[in-house]
Amino acid sequence: NDDGKLSVLLGGGATAATEAALATFVGAEERLLVVSNGAFGERIAEMAQCLGTPMSHLRYDWGEPIVLEQMQGMLDGDPRIRAVAMVHHETSVGRLNPVNEVGRLLAPRHLRYIVDVVSSLGAEDFDMVRSRASVVIGSANKCLHGVAGAAFVITRPELWAETEHVRPRSMYLDLRRYRTAQRETGQTPFTPAVPVVVALEAALHELEDQGGVPVRRATYQALNARLRAGLLGLGMKLRFDGPALAASLTVAQLPPGISFGSFY
Image (cartoon, rainbow, N blue to C red):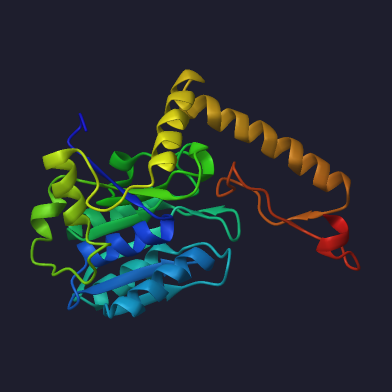
């Protein structure tokens, strides 16, 4: 990339890309702090367990806000932690997490910072530089409007040298293979999902032609306001409000006595 960051594209969904990032940038003997307040943060913790990565888990109830002072306390109390992973838009609850504030907390500690932007990139306010993330994980579908089957990992350039000591724990999910193949041949090291990649390229061109992320975000915000007004008119209770509310997802609670099936 022009700004020095490297984007690595791989076949598979966002789960594959997330597991690849954990396997490539966190050593089997290093401790990872996972911060979660929903299903997808908890999935990161499950991945770390499957990889055998030593892990601390700051786990909140679904939708509860992340308390920076608690995270700081865990970091102060455990110098073994070398990396932190969290989700920006936790789609199980429609909440945006404070990735920029967490980044400011981690930067002076020189910890690797892994952020899942799968459900926020393209619609929510996110900037990799402002968040100070070391790694961001995205997917072709969701708010980029591609189709499922391809995902990507974007890294700060210095991260590769910082993690040279990490031994691969997977062949297909070893991002160093992808980095080498892209540099040497412009290809992926394994059979690519060609139709999905072509669709992603078309979707990115469409995003640019429509005016970029600010225009798409405004569209999502208008749809969100319309949905919220309609749901309130039906007597629904909205789950969240305020600055942590996602633009791209609306969560409401059904009134007593109405099943989702009948509502749908």
